[in-house]
Length: 283
Image (tube, rainbow, N blue to C red):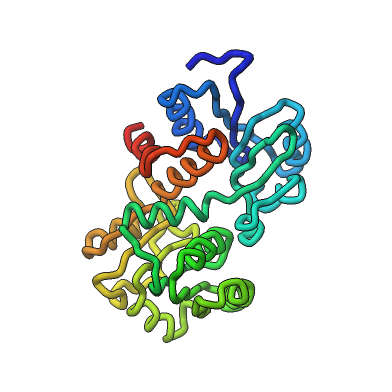
């Protein structure tokens, strides 16, 4: 990689950022596609976010990804926010258009591309159960509802939080049947037995924990299972459902796919599906 005064700068705003795989997959892609650019991680504490965004303009940084804890906090500092990102309430990709900063959310599109590519999921009229009711769930809802699923069941430890999401999204997607349960509701078990796709959007499993709120015996054999968490050695959840014979995938494909979508927003170059995941798998 050769960097000059003409090289375009891209990066990642987050706290922490040292663990991120994004610099690897973007820099390899820039190099392989002969694009004169470099991607670097910027460690930005919450109190410094406003100054960091000003710095993007001052230094003419061409674009950035945004990760925890800034995905929601960055919205007021941008000139424009894409409609999907506004609906989700979070931005993970920013494009610098001559000082005008525009925010997007490629987590949503990356999630949809990942489940369709890796699980061959066909959204039309399908029933989906989403575990959790946080930001990752919101991104999944927007992706799935926009793609034409028939029913979305949001299940969360706090029923009130799940119900708030249903109330928020139901008017936006009137053709989708939204339901909300907590993990103790017997109707949750019924929903599991009918689900075509089950997605863990919680952080459970990030540190090797088992998912105790998903009884596998209630899942039909043809169901597809997706864990937004990823691990170099596979999460306990993915290991257990693989052993039981379900078709499943973890969040590495989503990480790669959202990166491919961000890469397209920045460069206009559409990478083939799975391009960045191959980079990560071969690291």
